[in-house]
Image 1: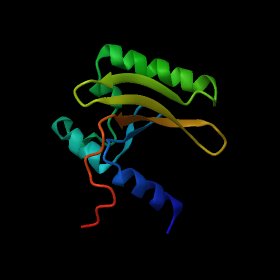
Image 2: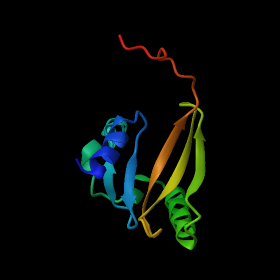
Image 3: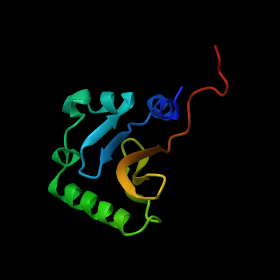
Length: 124
């Protein structure tokens, strides 16, 4: 089994939507949570599309500014972008880099703030 299979498995198991984009803003990967979350906008059909086409002019401007900031330094890797009150989550843009530290893309990270309702170690 390749290491990439492990990485993909981690992303696919995440309950939060994960959409990965290349430097040209093309959507290259969506986990199953993202496919479900964005079903009304096309779901899997969004793969290969430009992420900027899904955003307002102001959001497009901010995404481009963040990508420029990521490009300035290999230390620039995460930016807090907003808090979603309705879902009680914080949202970040995260740089993706290759083993040499070169920027290869980015993704949006969702961190939910609600206390977990699942019982601990419930294996039933």
